[in-house]
Length: 284
Ligand code: ZN
Image 1: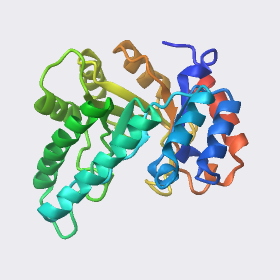
Image 2 (image 1 turned 120 degrees about the vertical axis):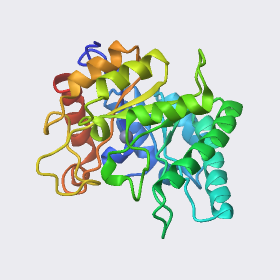
Image 3 (image 1 turned 180 degrees about the vertical axis):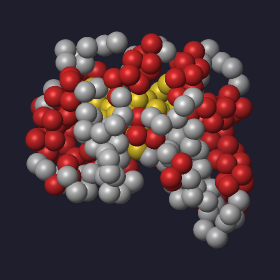
Image 4 (image 1 turned 45 degrees about the vertical axis):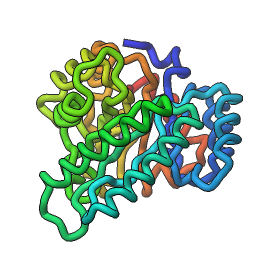
C-alpha cells in the first residue's frame, strides 16, 4: 500500500470538502499551495464560466483531475424528461473532457417523482448509462458509476451496491481490456457491505476502479447527507479498504470528499486542507 504521508501528490481534494466558500479559482490555488496532487471540481463551480480558463489554471497549478462531479439524475417520469437528463449529462461530459478529468462521476438518481418502480428506475439508469458511455468514449472521458448507501435509494441513487454497479458495467460494456465504464468507490457508501472485499477484487480484476473517495462515518450521524466525518473520526476502517483497493490494482488518486455542514464547512479552507493532509498520512 502506498505511503500517503510521502505521496501527497497521490491525494486529491474534492472541492465539496471545502464547503463552496470560495470561487473555484481560489480553491484551485489553495489546493495546489497545500501540496495536493489533484482536485475534483463540481459542475456548480464551473458551469457558466470559462471552462478553458479553469482547465488551464488547473494544469498550470500542476493538479490532476480525478473526476468531475457529478451527473444529472437519470430516471425520469417520461421519455422527454429522460432525454433532457441525458442531454444535460452529455454537456457535462464534454466539459469534463475540457477539464482533463479522468472520469465523469455518475450519481445515477432514484425514483422519479410519484413513482414506486425501483426496477424501472434501474432500467432507465442502464439505458442512460449506455448512451453516455458512447459520448464519453467519443470525448475521451471514462464514466464512473458511484453506488450510494441504500439510505439514498429513493432520492439519489437506485444503485446501492458495488457488486450491482459492476454487474451493470459488465452488462453494458461486456468484458474488455480497457474499459471506459467503471466504478467510483466511496468508503462512506460501501463500508458496511459484507460483500465489499470480493466486489473490490472483482472491480480491480476488470480494471474498472476509476475513483476512490474517502471520509468517515460518524456515530451518531446527525444527517446522512451533510454530516460526514474526517478520516479517523468515525467507524470506517479506511486504511483496510484502501489496502484492498490498491491490492486490486488501483493506482489513481485517493480523493477526500466530506460533506459537513456543521463542522468542516464552517472552518477556514486552509485549516481543513491542513487536517486533510494530516489524516491522509495517519488515518487513510
Ligand atoms: Zn463520493
